[in-house]
Image 1 (cartoon, helix red, strand yellow):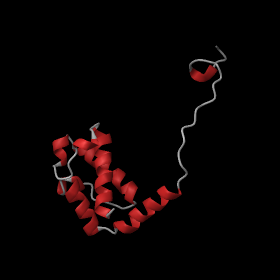
Image 2 (tube, rainbow, N blue to C red):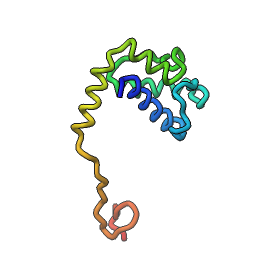
Image 3 (tube, rainbow, N blue to C red):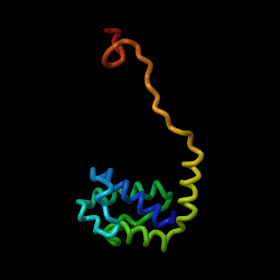
Image 4 (cartoon, rainbow, N blue to C red):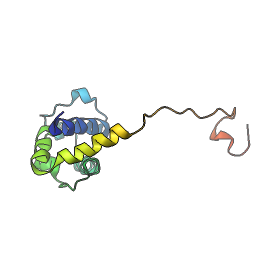
Length: 118
């Protein structure tokens, strides 16, 4: 996967979560405003992207580059994403598998018997 594809996939996932959309309905070539992205959502996504890539990005990224494709292209041309994405892939590979942990059943209902009631 190229750095541009990795960024595009991440942006599709984030946009779908941020706006409660089905990721399959998101086209990387459509303007982000088509999906209802407003300035607050855009700044939030830029902040999340900064955290993910460990880079400082312009807060106007999605207004200056209004599609996922153009945003990813801009990032690839202006930032060294290979090291940032390499760190992300390494961290993901080293992370232990996440298993669902079920709490032990105490037989008590609600609030876990917080006040000693059954």
